[in-house]
Image (cartoon, rainbow, N blue to C red; front, side, top):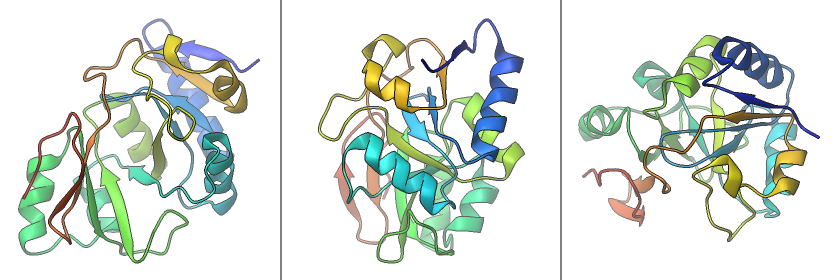
Length: 195
């Protein structure tokens, strides 16, 4: 059985254990401002493949959770009109699809989905580790995205190396997804639609 650590009761230990798991190529189940996510080091192909297997969807394209706008600029091209969209969207409940600056296992056709969440724990974790963290909802492909720890399937929890319990999420729904390059809304969710 995978260990569950409460952010409310053991914040410091949760942070240290999450750092350990992510640094060692593990998979973390974590809360955000939108829904609970499954994540790991987005630079590591084995981690990305493991998350695809947990989701039971081999062709999944994942976005990345980043610690701040500086990290967004490191992993995505942020120039011209895109600057305003990034400043408006982050931190927040919107995922932006931008042109990627780096080849990562999560990049699809030169594009990368990026998000800087309102949830400070995950932002701090990404910043401290200088790591883009895979960001996908903690459910099987096609299932309901969980907004609380009690909504996550036991099998998914057992497949993670660590589960962080942050209570119910703020928005209780997925992030909005906006493809800035195509000026197209891919998914309407909790976040503002930016154009």
